[in-house]
Image: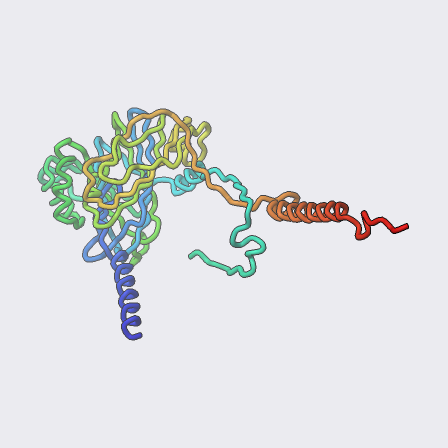
Length: 366
């Protein structure tokens, strides 16, 4: 008994330790940039969602992060292939995209009763679901305050110089990030460095952050992902792509195969979606991808045009088949029993008629 109790307590402690570890683990990277907590604080990115609009020449990325931890400030860095403009995004955008891409709801009938149907519904419980100007190879293109974001747009010819600038301006980062920026420096990309700080004094970064909108010129649809290889925990990416055609990644770049959860044409965009597309119709492709081992990420996402085949997920609601409000199985079984009873009665009558009378065939003596 004591051994069993000890094993149970050990399991509970291990699960608690695992849960607490997930809450305080630093998230040095997220889908398209690097999220860096300040000082000894910890910040975790629960999920990153991005909506991307590409018209063949210009790309706009709107990002929304859901974070947890105890950080009062953090930095976020995104490489971009050309000069970028930054602004606050519309918080309603992702809710509108979710409504446009909701799964189709269909009913699906089943014949035999299941748990919860009569006569198996005896017990039902109530369940609950729970800046200084440039310094040493770094140029400051611009710097502005956008709500909770302090945004610096930078150029760099040396990854070490870029790391030095970030540290000198209060952006603490792991040493590995400097080397990870090397490929972008070689390709002469630019950078959007963002300092995140709650506007309320003493508040921590928690929950959904205000979306940030970044626009830059690009001859191809590219979504920066290389810095996510620095992440310490598995990463999940949700990507809404608005373009003239259906778009999909050229390769999984080290993660699971990207899954298309919606593909269709938005003829009459409205609200925040219309603002992103410029009131023009567009093809919307929704992608989900999981990166169990972020260290295997070896490139950015380069998306290509594919056939404009529409796709929408279907969610089925299983319902017991009824006829006139009566379960079909009950009618069928009842009819079968009646038919069996009638057949038995008919057979009994026939047997009785064929049975000879007791005195049949006996002649009386004269």
